[in-house]
Image (cartoon, rainbow, N blue to C red):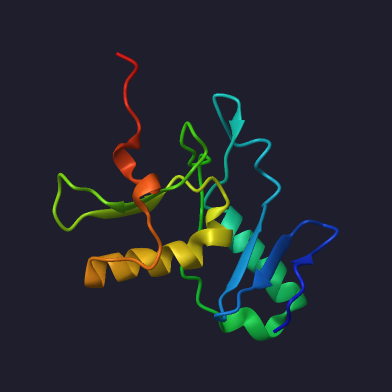
Length: 140
């Protein structure tokens, strides 16, 4: 498509195409201010379809695009603000990639590639040890 980040004045959606071809997008339904959990705005099942309708309004050619993943709910955030990516040592064959707090759309393709490589080969191109899930310790 093109290199520019897209966005609309109505804030129906924003997005950009990654170098490997995926179109990464986000937006809102307009209900987020009303859908609150203990005061924190959250998205709902209406959000992704609403954003897709916004995209189709501007780019009808994308009406048959397949949505691979979507974010909804609370902002998934760790105490240190850094994602968790890697194997869960106590459970062989279990891997995780979480706590990207919205930035997952930016680093998601690279994180997904490294996680897939870890699952298939047992190694990664990038040292993920600082992102391990067990980096947090209780104060006592």
